[in-house]
Length: 283
Image 1 (spheres, one colour):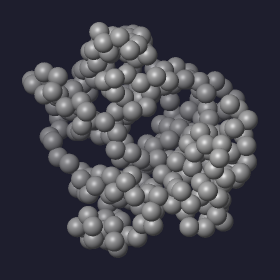
Image 2: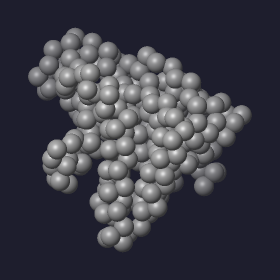
Image 3: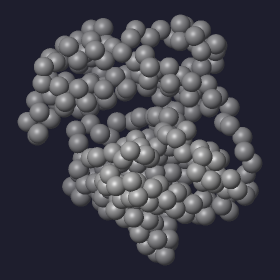
């Protein structure tokens, strides 16, 4: 998939029906995410919630809560999803001074929206407009992509406005600390991370950090770290012919191949060696 020069989105899938090996791992991230369910059977795990999806369901996420789809593989699973860095979409930078289109993600954080027939039709038109311009490298089309993206954000804002008007702004206790911890892990996941040192470098109490990280993401700090390393290993298996399983093990931060294999098998359902052979054979 091509990316635009404006880099509006970090990950993007439109009406995607492929289910790659191990892509249903529980995960958290710093990006905001929009997920729209087109077809199939899926229970979406969002934090401590289990949401049985229907076609036309829309989920918005601030990324911190652990989330993943549990998919019925006997049915075609079709979804549109994309994630984006909110820091790249500061409303003031693009002239949105009166309305903050990111407010639903900031205030409501994670919401499942069951759209009515009219809203569903409008949402699908908005998603189609985004896809229309996403792959173009034409400068005008890139700005039309940005406009289409903001149109979707304002559509979501309108859907969420009644609930937002009943709430006031407040960061969940510890949310800032968790974001700092995730940034730290993203920068150092390939290194030997020690909890005591991490907390010290972030100027936090170790036990407080462990507690709020679990409360907000649904994962322990080391669960998150292992998921991040496994995800990177999967990417390397797809794109690198030269690295052996042992090479990848060390490059993503595991000290022992046996530990890497055990964690990988537990999370992905295949051993690293078998996964590597499967994905390389699928190319």
